[in-house]
Length: 501
Image (cartoon, rainbow, N blue to C red):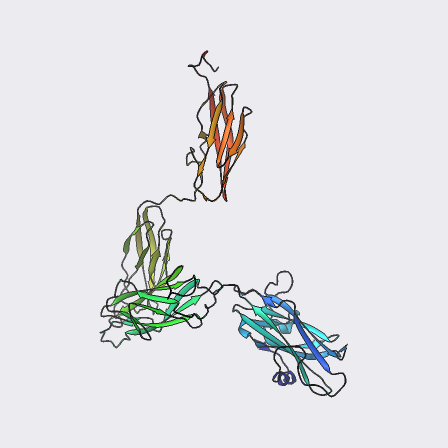
């Protein structure tokens, strides 16, 4: 932020009053100064994308403020640096801008500069400037002042601008970070490595803002039975064990992890409840994450090592494992080149987790582990997905047609001169939505109709031959169009026989 207030305005700002128009002490003249301040918009959306300050139709995050001063009932005389305006609250939620195109109010790339305070000249007793919202929810208070030159009294006016809101304050994500150096020594290590480390979890809402402080515990942390979990425990206040529940302050929950006798990896699961930001009354809509913490017997003097890994992954079942490296200097970070089976992800601490929904088969990715001093090892990770991929219940199809959309649906033959009726049905898609039918390019002898979710065609063919047309079925947002064909043939069993040329 830059502050261009002159010395006289800075001195005046020290005695700014609180919210309200036309504050300050009374003057000694009959026509004292008064000041008003108003904002074109008193509410602005949260600027999560850090969009630049602009005015006009695309200035969704910017509002214009108008300041005006009068001497009695008349505008005060014009002049330079008449008004001093500054943010007296909510600085984290936005900033002031001139947006006047002047070079002194722009950076070298001609982007407008943000200010905590601005000075403005008066033209016909008034002036204008701008407030632009930031990425933190809050209420900003803007105060402007003018000094009556005859008695030296300072008049002030303020407006409040609300930034953000509407996210509901319910957890949307949970992540964590461990106290440096980010790893643990095993409980009985002889290298004097710390065997307890502080961990903080961050609970953020839909707008990536810290969740409100809860009335009860809103974070559950547990040690999963994996790796070096035996003997490890979580600690928070009077709680100690493999599971604990804590409350957050400013969206941050703090606890510590103590290691057991074994080295390896401890896998923690963090869960919060999006339903009501409260896990003490049960978890109804879980939001969770996994974090792996390395446990060492000593500072490694051996090279970083990571062996090629083969994993078997059952389809449609929840899955979690941790890639493990040895040597080097922990903590380790992980990345991959390639694509994991759909439904699985790898996080920075080496946890592969998720519920696979993938075609059965072998998937290979290239994984790289990097230790704390930049050493790297790259190896293949092979994942074999077993079990059939279930049919997607939301795939909408026309019954009786093959899966190949390039192949016409062949309906039962029609007999020349005889009545013909066929009913179309569909399956899949959203069962709450009705199916509608549309038929195009029907031959002259066929007519169409719809009853409920069923489409009908009927008629009496006068001649033999093959008739082709199109049928379109729609269910909600799902639309299927297929080519359909009917062959009209004779009937040798009829009396007299019906023949075709």
